Image 1 (spheres, rainbow, N blue to C red):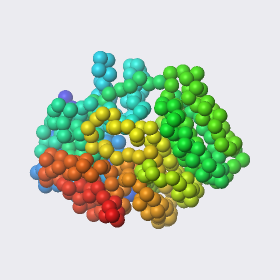
Image 2 (spheres, rainbow, N blue to C red):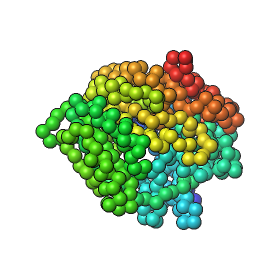
Image 3 (tube, one colour):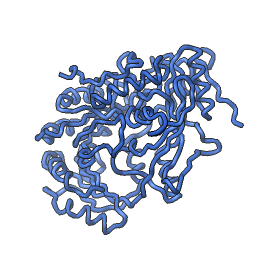
Image 4 (cartoon, helix red, strand yellow):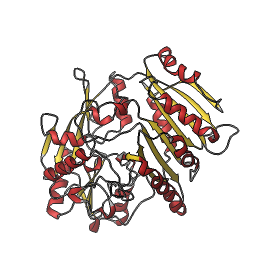
Length: 448
């Protein structure tokens, strides 16, 4: 039997030990250390989660939750709250991952990383979804509520909570202790990569936009600028990246060959239909997001009706504040043109064009420059947007829409029903004062 996890109190724990417990798993070294939790608990069991909620009720404080710890703005670190860290939940002696061969549903705790889950599914010949939104694959969850109840939630049991789990993000009004996820077969992965000078930006981005509606539906289309290590070239470049998921090389070549044949200008470097893997994709992400760095991110869904997107984005994508920063355009089309997988869920906002900024730097002295770049770009784009994706947002900096009007109103009601006292920390907005109401779900200018 596992011993109960200790709850570390700020006032009775060595300051260095407490600080390290709070911040060591926050990857972003741009940190607001004025936010100091009241207590910290590294839960190992669901009973520990229940005990932490009971502690918070007794102390009259809130509970903030950290699982992956990868939010750009460190949403889990909240002033005078109990920080409940789930990195060790259900991991003794190892991560408890279960797979049902009949239903193709895998279950795991929030302590399991995507890479661990993929490795497990590959080993059992399962898979991971690649089309649409990941939250569409949530079939059920197990939670501890704000009043410390343990519940199973699905479309037939506590359906409003499963609805919220599919798109509420940090505004979910309970603590998830286990996910049940529908898997899909894992195919092979191939990529075509084309590197261009920024002088070709408008031509290449328009080419990608025009390709998206009719390209092979198993192919992801991305345009990103950064400082890529291309021989005999310095400075930022535009990468047109086409990633396809196919059962074999010949199928991948069939998907990528029409794209290759339609290149509007010669690239500086072309890599056609190169084999890749999930491990390779994770390695690329690790390289693009180095440890011990400072980060700032924001994003918009640009409206579908805009006809001059390359012209609007050219200066943005050329103006990176540091060599490690990046600007990304991701084609959501054709996924953005269908219903959300037939699911009734909080996620309710998307467009054909996802644009995200990732400022990456090392020195605190560059904070104003890098954060100012992100904020300035967003000020120039936000009125052309239909809203934003909350995972790459910072609610303290900018108001925008994250859900449809109907879904935003429903989410507020779900939060009122399941957490009427605001026990579980929700959205970290300006002053951390959103409480039970959560985000206004309106644009910075008030939705005029």
